[in-house]
Amino acid sequence: MTLKDRSSLLHAGLVLALAGAAFGAQAQTTSQAPATATTPTTEQIEGAFKRADANQDGKLSKEEAMRMPVLAEKFDQIDKDKDGFLSAEEFSAAVIGPK
Image 1 (cartoon, rainbow, N blue to C red):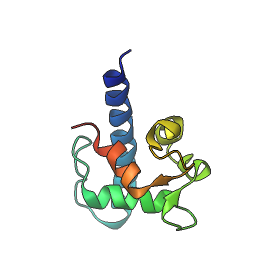
Image 2: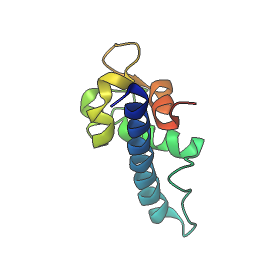
Image 3: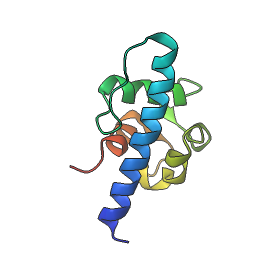
């Protein structure tokens, strides 16, 4: 499997996880249809990050990332600066995927 294939699989998994999280949150607050799994909105990405950030310190630890199994599985790959945490920017880049 090539790096591009792995990146595409990671993106697809994160988008699906995000869509599931967004749908669950939206189902509790409104009857509007959620955005499609292929087009997560900025608000959905930010909301998923905030929900995963249990201690609200603005970054995700490996333990917090466990709330999204796809994220936890690829944590080290997404952690571009290798500081042991995912910033909102690293999380967003992983969800949006390669351009």
